[in-house]
Image 1 (cartoon, rainbow over the protein chains, first blue to last red):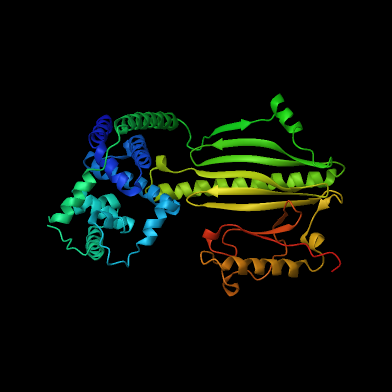
Image 2: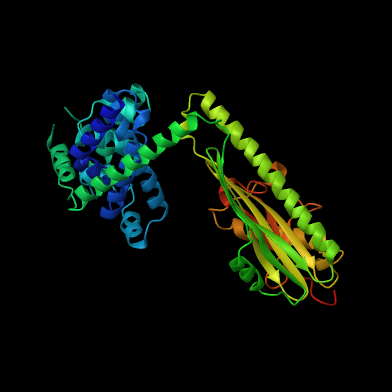
Length: 164
Length: 287
């Protein structure tokens, strides 16, 4: 039984590796760093696969590890922003309403928790319940953050970003 | 789904996937599975034993290489030298301890030498004992609140020393103990020795009778200067900030022989400011 959980997890990871990479990349914006994050998450997940008792939570469980790793990297790298990266960002502060951002770029302006919700919901097509489990928050918090993020995005892009 | 979302999703989906990804994933899978097997083997082995059993590694300095290394320590004005007397690592489920313990050799001042060495030894023993107790308590609390014992992050403790000043007159070194649980916390013990008089140096010896005022002034100036940077902040004096140096103020002598007053993390400033050190200039001769 335990054996199969581990095998299931391995199979799941191998099958969805590109999704993991894209998500990691969306935080760290760097190819090598994203590879690192994915690798580190896999090593951590597999070495602790025995603590995953219920295989039906495999997906949310793995994403939680992946998100944690990405977030750690993201926070570290934000503290150590290189000069060239810092410049354009400083040149276009949030108040610059005239220059409308592309929706994709606007997402990077959200705080990291909001980014997570938007990406998981719209790019990885996750259910809000799943997102709540992955981020260790309750469903209502996820919902309210989602609406707040959508409002912010609307301000940033000047476009109607309602969904569905 | 309207257009901007479609576009954004498209852009997301087009994130280029590096060729190495498959290989990176495969090697991570291997590494993770290996680590898991090790973990399991370790757990099986542990069940038969008492939980408190620790793997103990002691690097005894009996080897000829070590003897050679010791003799290579720079001799401090022929009078004193500090060398690593013990270096050991303890590794078990609760903590990881790394110790580099200094000892002092003073020519012609055996009393002082002995006193300081004993003091270092007792202090470190006590510190380690406390740390071990704390690690055990933390782990017990972690397990009692539903944590998986296998996931407990060992507490990392390291003890090391740094020589701050060595000349024919003074020897000053600092002993640091760092304990890392979630965040790191360090404690400093400073030893300042007047080699010629063969005794420990006090701030008064270095700065003269007005040492409290001199040091306070230097610290206040230092705080005022550093506070100009908006990223820095100190506790205001009425809220536990700096008012005056302590009777047994920690300090060491820097390369120039000036005393550096040391305040530990949280002592006079918020934690993010870390340890705060201030140089106290020597009073100019004649005053």
